[in-house]
Amino acid sequence: MQESHYDLIVIGAGSGGIAVARRAAAYGARCLVIEEGRLGGTCVNRGCVPKKMLWYAAGLAEALVDAPDYGFSVETKGFDWASMQHAREAYIERLNGIYATMLDDSNVQLMTGQARFVAEKKITVDDQLVSAEHIVIACGGRPSRADIPGAALGMTSDDFFALQQQPQRVAIVGAGYIAVELAGLLQALGSEVSLFLRREHFLGRFDATIREALMLAMQEAGINIFSSTRLTEIRRDDAGCLCLESDRGLRLEGFDALIWAIGRDHNSDRLALECCRLNVAEDGHIPVDSLNNTAVEGIYAIGDVCGQPALTPVAIAAGRRLADRLFGGMTVEAIDHDNIATVIFSHPPVASIGLSEEEARARHGAAVHIYQSQFNPLYHALTTRKVPTTVKLITLGANERVVGCHVIGAGADEMLQGFAVAMRLGACKADFDATIAIHPTAAEELVTLR
Image 1 (cartoon, one colour):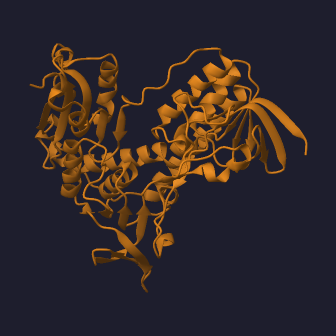
Image 2 (cartoon, helix red, strand yellow; image 1 turned 90 degrees about the vertical axis):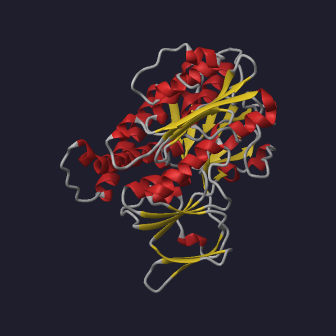
Image 3 (cartoon, rainbow, N blue to C red; image 1 turned 45 degrees about the horizontal axis):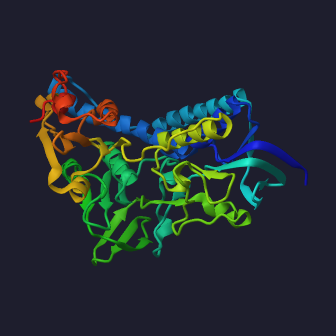
């Protein structure tokens, strides 16, 4: 088998993988990217991008409900799921093409197939053998299913984004981002949604005030939330509907779809890592240090597969810094994972950065001071439908340095980026107070809290 040698091989053409390859190629490195699926990874094909488009559609559905309160005479004739899916897929295909062009323009070679290690610096892709001094593993993950009888009757988020028809009565199992996002958008688009949580609450790592506000908003919107409920079996009845059994003796029938949103498995198990003497953690992620080095010299991991925050910008930043260090001769700093802003595109959206109140009090006790407010934004002054906004600041010490900022409500997804910059610069409550508010906005509440 003939061998081709490169300066850098990247396994996975998601956002992080493409970022590290293009940056390395800009320094003159000979780079190869290996990908078995579509370019762009989970975010582009089965995650952030298609989800956000459906989120926008759901937002339009909510606006149509509110339109008569603003004087519009609106007649709605339903939502054409298939038309939306076709337009969305066409857009994603264009993105796939753009990524291919970007790699080509950057002089990065693309190879299609499943990568497997045969030695520390050697990989096979089908019948081809390639090697490199530096190898970056950026293969991401895949959605999990529960290990119960009938689990295969449910779909994953990957399957959801391929649906050609909207499910009318759907069960969603999970308590993280994906579960609450899909529940919100499906309900807004007209589906009857039931959300099953193994524990009492969803979004367990988020501030309790924000989490509870979202749960209340979802219930008031009509979503059925079954807390502390673990499904034990799924069956299909004679009419083709799904029947769900739980450990509480609860039996629910008549669902036309079930979506598993219980987490993701790391794709490290597909790479034959034993051939390069690289061990994985119990959950399958590849351990790395703060600069994304694995335990094997010359092999690195970035993105979801290495257990760092599963966010596209984190993978991109890690990839670019890695290339700067390996091929640009730069001394780079580790990414600060403590202050990464994140958004849940729920209905209403949630935005969060820094410590929750629970985390802050556990670490700093009485040095913590909380400021918060709940209000109906001006948009809802005229609407029958009311969705409150809640804003919350967590401050620390005599200077009241802001160590947490949390928002739920319309516009939360767009307003937090600027506040994240302020927090990275060490802003204190007095800095927020001294900032002239933009009126009338929901964001002004964060600089007028008392």
